[in-house]
Length: 475
Image 1 (cartoon, rainbow, N blue to C red):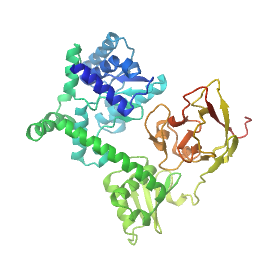
Image 2: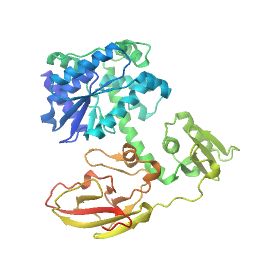
Image 3: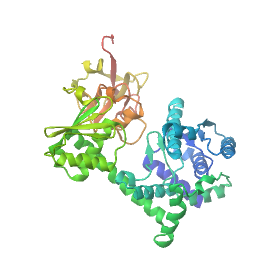
Image 4: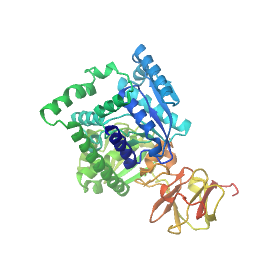
């Protein structure tokens, strides 16, 4: 009964978070530890009920523990064989990577893993990659970030999905997973480094959490997971509000933003902080800490101060009247800053109709079709549902804060994150046309994908065919 209940909770988490698309494929990150072995077994047990397939397992040998790491690799190969799944094994010298990048071994390992995950997903056309992060990992992360200092986004801990990586075990404890493995008579590997209390996470795991459980709350793991879920929801809502506000008070150019200081200063401080952080990170393309956000807001709040220029991480600011200009300190020196705003664009797209988008060097057209031989959702020609559209459509450039539901993903994603996932350079994003419905939002990111909301589900229905071609090429 306990095993059945665990499976139901596991499937419920996948469905609730839309972590694996129906009919989709998933790869499983397998370290050989109890959490990843349990995840592999649970996914293998629930493919029929869940409506997905397991493409393969992925094991990454970090080459940090000599013979033990090689034994882990061999264990993973044998486990994959025992459950009848192929396995992809990658070897990375994480120690050398840490030295080259001048980061911690933990950070280097994280970078290596997620780079490999993305590469494998793209190469093998896999929808998502599942990792074995548990409720215990979530609790540890919340405490670590609380100790170091973090806002709602940090206290959200580990997110159920980031890009192509999903974490279906965040509602399940490590103890429950080990009980499941015992009932299934499945072996796993123990990593001796998990007991090295010189590592901060291990001190939290083996000292702080047991202390809190004994002295304050036996269910501290569940409490912290609940707090993380609240922080996650709050952070998502605040991000959406901040994105809308960003579009109102910040003007964007290539490698530069201009902040309306008077408008930003009039906003509530929580909102102003998020907008300021977005502005600094957009230009510098790196994370920005609390101290730098407060420094920028202090300059905004005191326009009469004699300071007119200042350096920030990866950026430089300059006061221009009531505005603050933030420029990339490497690529755009202040002395060579552009003085004119690059043109955005906005056109009506009738049905049938065709629009020349000089800013993108493209021609975009729309026409009605019926029962096409191929219902395309990617490329230069796509088919979308013709029902309930607000005509004419609007063909425009990207606005900060734009979001939509990419086909197959399930949830909403910021267009900026969508571009990042596809490694589209910042300077090219403004020139990618968006076909939009004024009432329902983005229909097609031209050349990159349609919205799930406009997916054609009935091949016999009347559809709308959207096409793009290079300017000067005959249609």
